[in-house]
Image (cartoon, rainbow, N blue to C red; front, side):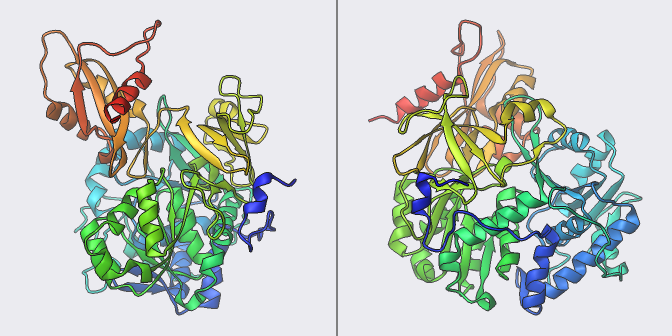
Length: 554
């Protein structure tokens, strides 16, 4: 690719282009399994699985999948938190050329059913805490194979569950029983190309159900290697035998999938699995860890850790080598706290459609506060006129951010209209409005789309709006992301009730709790006589957003 103005700012050891190995995702597991077979690949509440054993388990599970009828191209749904079973099932599916479909355990049946129907999932792996929910889902859609497990099954000293203890439906399978019965640990004889589909990652939309970004084997292998190369200036200072990655972000999201799990394979790093981030138990966990080579996180997580009363006692500066922040802008005060500790950190931008990566600040080089940084090697970016989407805007002027390169998805699953609208000549129209300075650093200034980013979660207001309108007392409603000190943004609902009706904020919130994932539920509700509307009757979300912003002005 031709020289770009940002290339001069790459770290001393980062090239503008790389020959990414022509490996599959499953092949990545072979790197540490060969180099450090006896090193722990996973640490789950002190229980460890070595890289060698992880590869063997994944192969045994892959062959069990084959016996159950799973074939190349089939969609395998993972509805799991950060537990060993996720990692085993993930690499098992990848070794068969199956397509992993990630589902958040926080999804409700109303959210899961259309996504399962859309992707045609033939195998779903779920866990004890969500089995009742999946029973409800199965009444409304057809899933040929359901596999159940427990969060305790791979925990040393804990009793392994049974189909009876999990109350699995007749015909459902039990994860540990499948694994124990399978003795075939040969690699499946399936030809997998780098252009084959590998994973469907759901990303919100302003209308309808979420879109499924279809990522290829090439997308994901490239993402893992580029992430590794981008941070290598500091990581290489730790020998592979001692490398550790903290996995507190959910593996069912592409960010952790690439920069934690697949990164760990390339770097032979032990993954410390945290199924659920809760600050007090997490600080206890942190206190017992000698050193973390890489810690990908979101701003709320970083803020909770560095602002915790025990941060000084634990001596974070000696615990963490490299901290990476994504999922939303990191406040200036928080950056200063991290810098004062002497921890290397990187802040960047990515989307599900770009394999979670794309633009980032150099780790050792020039990092600009408020900037998402510069494009990754082999990635190109430009800003175009917001209205026409065509002509490039001058330096310093706002435009819609377009990106192109090997990290950009293949397409939206089974959605040619959306693919054609957002992917043109290889350029992905991101919907984010940014400016670029004279050195090639990008700054997000607005979102063309109305997405809310709260605590690192991407929330699309339309999902919430549709639920609000289902309430029998609601005549008009809209949800907006408003500034929040801890979560970055939080969800506020503006509601107009039907004539003669009365309701409380709690009533509206509780109604939403039954139909939305917990992070989407409005935290605040304001009742109004009417909502601001355009001449054609469209509710003006931006007016409400501006009202909230004005409240913060001195």
